[in-house]
Length: 191
Ligand code: GRF
Image 1 (cartoon, rainbow, N blue to C red):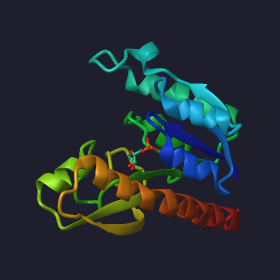
Image 2 (image 1 turned 90 degrees about the horizontal axis):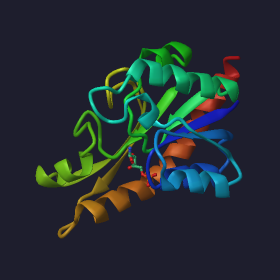
Image 3 (image 1 turned 180 degrees about the vertical axis):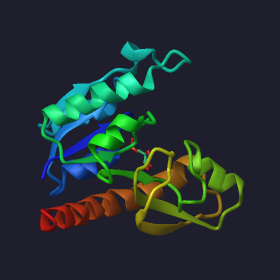
Image 4 (image 1 turned 30 degrees about the vertical axis):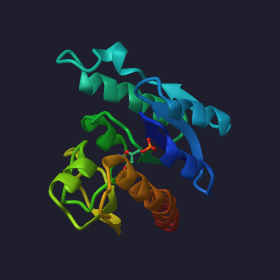
């Protein structure tokens, strides 16, 4: 089984995948980011499919064509399972056609609470006593799809977005690789 990881950011979740037993064969980024350096240092192949080449972040962004290119890259590396790890682009239909039920995501809240990019600050602003993280199958709708694993993280007095997110990420770095490996075992058994 071959896993492709999609990244956009600092890549600390990626580090947890590379440091374990997840068979990562390629790391694909949608922009230049630290995660690409993490991948290179980890000895994994990297690919930059830069949004800037498909219209960037404005209204000109061609999501479908961008997604098609991304699928080509994943398929060229023989990827069986896609794992998003802090990936900042919502992908279009072609990736779900190519990898139905085989795209995973980790999200820093207890979905369905606080979907979207600001999950941690929104949980704080809402005065939540408990938040956490969710590993789920990604679908066309952002932060939806069957939940595979969830774990709670208690909000502490004086928590900031940074401190709370870091504690959530500590859990993600354990829960995400474990869940990916569980999915891989199931896919292997179904072969
Ligand atoms: C994680 O909290 C993940 O759930 C969210 O983005 C964060 C990525 O962290 N989608 P990092 O860039 O790997 O440190």
